[in-house]
Length: 544
Image (cartoon, rainbow, N blue to C red; front, top):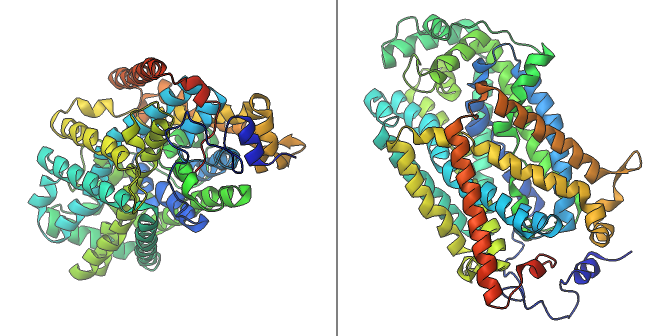
């Protein structure tokens, strides 16, 4: 059987001591494998983040009140596991920086690869900067100010100026972490993950060993002393005004919650664009374990969280407090952050603040995901000469594509300003998840047709050895993944409860795709004048 290198060479790649293709910007990417599989597991767990994404997403359960979060989380975890198999197969077949862009451009064609990936990994992540910033405000700035007794400051962080300041802090933090390089970022995320797990464990233990009555008493006490809300526990339930039950059924309504869960569980493959810089990227089992383990760490933590919330907080209180907040009628005026509520049980300000700070490590370990994965897509496109050469330059010391990072940072600042000061612009960000899911759909399709589209490359891939009932596992998982994404797209487009079928948002995303088409068309014209055929480049695979 041919080796991966031999298969790549048959496509115009590099094998042994042969000369690298002159079509690429240089002989090798210049990136180094600075991560282990353990680092990839942590990155996947932080990308599907139980605290920064899961807890916030649970707040919207009220939009489909008959659905059961517990069932939806478990069903989503199983279904997204097939996404992990699909992406693991693509990674080991073409283990290069750039992920979706590289696979789609080599299997589906250069125009498809660039248009889907530039929109889904580059332009759309500009819009995630204010989303990340909002979470920093809701889970650190606002509850910290409230526990310190500065309700005016807590409210300021929800104002236009406050939102923009927090967005700028978020962008600066993300840029700084990415500039550390893969090894530097790995150290930061490792310690943040460990500290965040400690904070999460403390929160769970507090809720586990606190009686429901003691929790009610604490909420009433601090609701009154901090927010001047009398009988805060019952007031929160009344503000939501909806009946909720905790359990596993009914199945139909719980299935309707699955598209809501995708806003946090669809991202275990977020590090797939980085696998040109991860050791063991040619080992299917190790690559799959990285994504799968990260996903199921999040699923298990989610299940534990939901059970202790039901036991101590009460399911009706938790969901109605969230429902009132999601509708802009929150009793406290800020997000009813579970870590803040759990901290109130302690009746010690220093301990309450310490818990919020520990839990904030989930954000600080996660914030780099805003730009890290995207810079590798921009880098890969520039290395293929679709984008200007400067975007593929790599710093000597830390091996960071700094120009690619700048292409993420600067537009994010401008769009964050629009998000903060122009209320209508927020509706344009609603399809941010939808566009990334569309990118995943095309990669899943690429995995399905890979054995027929690139038979030599597939035969050389370690993934080709894995079968299910005699059927190649990766193409089969690709079909299941396509089913997952089409299921979600149907619900997102047809049901306003998910908040992503705004006409204005769809128009804005359409403009994003048009921008990608214009960039690729322009690059094709410019490179042709320079004597470079981008179509030939798409038949080759760069060496790291």
